[in-house]
Length: 211
Image (cartoon, rainbow, N blue to C red; front, top):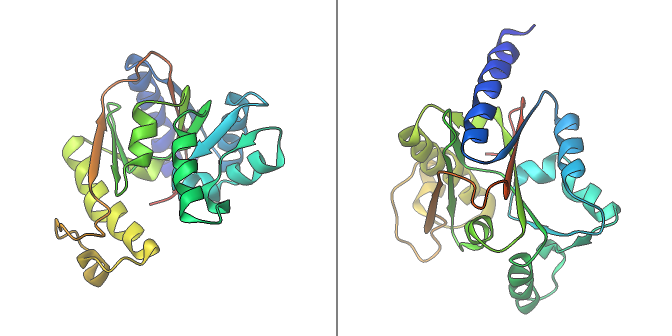
């Protein structure tokens, strides 16, 4: 076995136990295809579903599969006006399922997400009946301090480049703890547990996914 895969499998098994202790449904998948199949298995046909701005979910082909399947998809990428986008944000809060990734997850199961608008952390926290996180093993860190560092200094600057916002981290790729009007680090959420029990599922993937 590849030594990195062996390490990830052992760490993934430990993390599944920690997440289960924190009342999540948790799964470890060795491949992207296996992870995609697991996510689709967790969502009953006919369900309404939306997602946050997750490159992980898109890159795995999950959004494409949902559009092609028997689901009521709420996809703001298809909106034709700012008013329709706003309406879809609100629809997502009452969806049966909401998909997201994370900015970082600790080895003992704490999850950190940072948002600019807050729609993603809002849906994760309250609203949709079920939330499914899809998480590459590249996002696993040792503790909450490392999780915050990863979210602020790795994920946020890369996403800022993707959004093409003229924030300080676009210039040099480093967090400046800015307060610009276009800042994408306005809402920071740390999840300790899934509440109610089993509302959240975490699908860990032995891949480097997302930012």
